[in-house]
Length: 141
Image 1 (cartoon, rainbow, N blue to C red):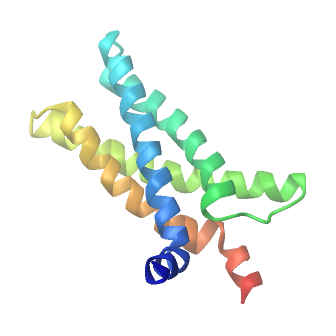
Image 2 (cartoon, rainbow, N blue to C red; image 1 turned 90 degrees about the vertical axis):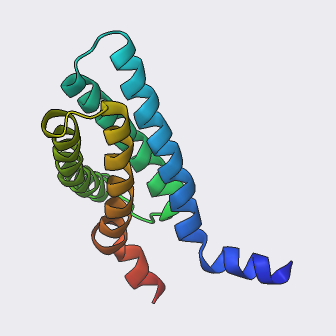
């Protein structure tokens, strides 16, 4: 049991990111699917799902994944801007992925939404760890 606890402690950040990344994906898929069910266009459904899932991701990543120690209104706003800009970049790529699958390959939009979500989760972790929440890592060292 102690070996398992040691592994969990060692990879806590990655495990928490996977958990909240999974929950962010659920938020995205539920919002996207709900919007599509009420006949919102694919483009608007994607945008709405992206906005709400990024907000959810920022709040959970800041507190429970990367344990941000950023203080002060200006610094928190800067952190949030960097987070949203990184998500915007991956959101654009995710959008291009779904366009490719739906409009070029003429395949199911729900499947391509899941595919782009996998890409986005991995990319967002790397960007968050290397660019957004890196100050905490420097402080720890």
